[in-house]
Length: 124
Image 1 (cartoon, one colour):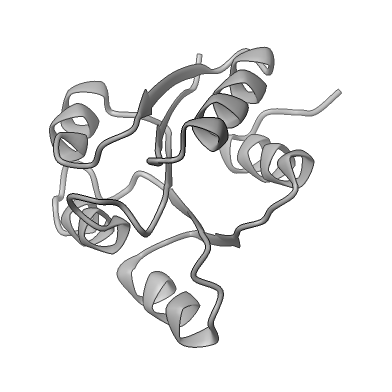
Image 2 (tube, rainbow, N blue to C red):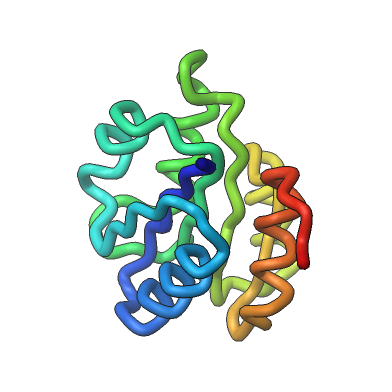
């Protein structure tokens, strides 16, 4: 079973994505705070991370840089899900190693299709 970690401080977004991923048969770990994210990622070794940029403690970009600089974690794909929609923001996200840059508001259906595609899971 594929495992996804979602890191977002907005409870509604976290619950909505978690619900959709679980319905698709994925194991989901949700984090509302980013301080312990790297420790959880190291422990859980997810197949995918969905990460908000603007977090209160540690920004998503800082988390992304830490993941991509760690040889044990660098291969984990990261989707940045953020309200930062400027072209320069997206360029910075891609430069940091983000596989997909998705701006809020977003389509939950398209997010699910993209997640399943990334994980190599055929859709019904």
